[in-house]
Image 1 (spheres, rainbow, N blue to C red):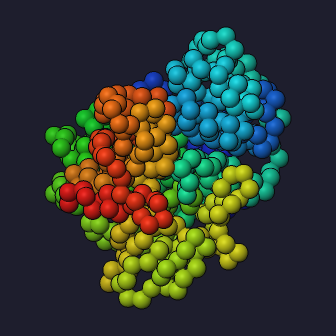
Image 2: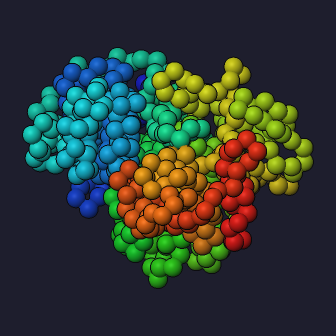
Image 3: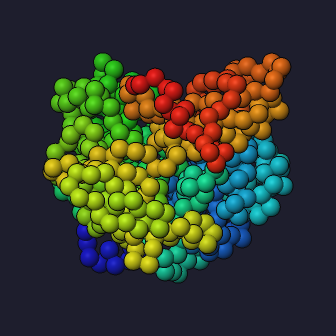
Length: 521
């Protein structure tokens, strides 16, 4: 990278500007409806920064982005950062209560959305999230009380007045909501330092993961930290090209990959599972030089299927709080089923015996399992709003995940982060689902656990419910009721009605006994 250019990179938005200066005519983004060069994207980022500033938003204000993988998302995201604002990505599948919590907790003053549900509930959102002033709709027209995004952007006047003077690297850049250690999603505070550090760390991996000549498949949602930073962030870091996929379809995405000669595929196991059964697998991956998988373990059978097709899938591990990449099998140069590899450059990692919430504990010996503790400039600044539960005074942060190192030094995960359930790379916290189910008038008590699915690599959300005596509650009825408060990926795949739940001596539901009752998989 050019030393002079690197000196002016303080935000991800600066990476867009750097790519535009180097090669303004090089394609930045491709989708079914748009082809955007880096020069054009930089202008759109300027326009977005001016538009948001024109709404009266000031540096440090939060703007929620509830958008799919269209060219609007990168422009608004980088535009927010260029204006000194804080971007708050929001899942497009959020229900009303989930979006309300994100908006109210973050204190977002603006929401940019393509969600029909959010648009129709704009007045209610403003009433419940009192800081919310502006709802921008990603459509040519919008209902009364909202603003059409295209018109707002068209009326903006790009200029340096919308660009914030360089702030501190520790300034908050992105607030990503993750379940953390409580039942309600919490905002992980990612600074400009953390985002850029992880991009630099990934950029130091050899072979180089992204070059200007590469074409990346951007099928992971950009509102997810994996799609946001290792996805779009690395495209901007290298000045490469990203192929946007708004709705993942296994056959269609393989055809798209072949047509655009995709070279790099950041993916999650569920995507690889679906691709593995497609007749167009070899053709779709014909130009791919790096196939990457993260967010959950890849089923060994799927790993072997790709190997038979001549495709090596390199696995990695990370967390929202680490911006997010921590390890990769690329580091050791050997892809092996079940391993997430070693720490990437610039990340320190230890396995600690008996590490608690404070990260204390001695390092484990030999191949004993231990809790992963990490340190590096890519770590978050704690949870919103006060930085709670961030890295300790020495910079170490306990992940809550348990792993062991094999003879080669490669990590193998053996347990999930506390009680979290991972569904297609998204966190589902049992307490949140349990709270919704228990609120039903015919439910006495509810417990939720996850069960690994060896065929997909995902986890399945299972619910155990004690119904009120004499009621007529059905599984279908309860799930339909819960769908009003939970996104689809959080909904239980099955509900088992029981007379009572197992409890410990302290009165807590014994999740261990519920898991023991599950058939082995």
